[in-house]
Amino acid sequence: MALWTTRLPRAWPAAVRHPQVADALLGVLVGVSSLVSVLMGPRAIPGRSLTSLDVLVAAMAALLITLRRRWPVLTLAVVTVAAAWAVAGRGEIYVLTAVSVISAYTVASRRRRTTAWIAGAAAALVVYLAAVVFAGQMWDSSEALEDLGWMGMAIAIGDAVRTRRAYVAAVEERAVRAEQTREEEARRRVAEERLRIARELHDIVAHHIALINVQTEVASHVLRQEPDQAEEALSHVRQSVRTVLDELSIVLTVLRRADDPEPSTEPTPGLERLGGLLDSVAAAGLRVEHQQEGEARSLPSAVDLAAYRIVQESLTNARKHGRDPNAQVRLTYTPDGLVITVENRAGPSPTGTRTGHGLTGMRERAASVGGTLAAGPDASGRFAVRAVLPAPVSQEVSK
Image (cartoon, rainbow, N blue to C red; front, side, top):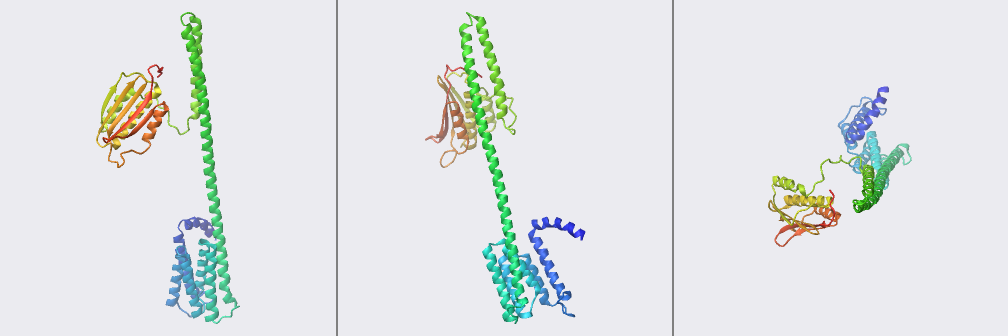
C-alpha cells in the first residue's frame, strides 16, 4: 500500500503530459476488468465461459475510452446505443454503463455546460427507456433509475472540473497580464527617469559651457594687459571643465543599462577614415569612385561622424541593392557645410525604392546635426543619396 501511494503522485504528471497513453491504459484496464467480472464477479454465473460477445464488448469499451478525449460527444453517443442494446437484449452489461459514465464526464469537462447537460440527459433517457420499454423493468425501479443517477453525477463532476479548469486558466492569464503590465510600467518609469536625467545632463553641460565661454572671453581680453587675471580666468575654465567631465561621467553611468555593451576604446570615426571604408567595401566587391570638390577642412565632431555614417550606410545599401558593383561618392565642401552624394544603379525593384531602416537612420543622422537628406531614383535609373550637413567655415571646430 505504501508503495502504491508513493508511485501514484509520480505517475500523475506523466499522465497529464501523455493523456492519450493514459486513456489507452485506462481502456485496457476497464476491458480486462469486464472480462474478469464475467468469470469471477458478484453477478458471475458458475460454469459460464467467455464468449466472443464478451470479448467484443471489452474491446469496444477499451477503444471508446481511448478515443473519448478526441471525440467526446461521438463516444458518448456510440456507448449509449451499445448500452441501450445491451439492456434491451441481454439484461445488463455493466462495463458499458461504466464507459457511458466516463464518457459523460469527458463531455462535461471538455464541452460547454449546455452541450454537456443535453447530451448527458439524452444518453440517460435512451438507456432508461430501453430498460423500461424493452427489458420490462418498472419505471420507478432502482435498476432503471440507477443509470440516471450515475449519469447526472458524472456530468456534475465533469462540469465542476471544467469550471475549475477555466477559473485556474483565467487566474493564470490575469497573473501573466499583471506581470506584463508591471514590466511595462517599470520600463516606462525607467524611460521617464532616463529622459529626466538626460534633461538634467543638458542643463549641466549648457551651464558649464556658458561659464567656460565667458571665462575664455575674459582671458583672451586681458591676456596681455593683465596676465594674472587671465590666469585666474583660465583656472576657472579648467575647474569648470573638470566639474562638467565628472558630472557627465556620473550621469552617463546612471543612463547606461546593465546589458549595454562595454564602451569602445576606438576613436570616433570620421571622414579621415573614409579611405579605410572604401577599401573595405572594395574588398566586399563594390568598386567606388571617390570625388572631392572644394578644399577639405576639419568639421565639428558630430558633423564628421554623421558624414561618415551616411557614406557607410549608403555604400552598404548600394552593395546590397545595386544593379552592378559600381558606386560614386562625391564630397562637396562649401562655405556653409558639406554636401554628400552617393549614387549607384538602382536594383530591379518594381518601384525603384528601397525599404528598411537604413534610409530612416540616415535621415535621423542628418537631422541630428541640423542637416537634411534626400534619397530616391532619378530618371536615368540611378539611385542617389544626397545629404546636406551644415558646418560654416566660421564655426569653431572641436574634436
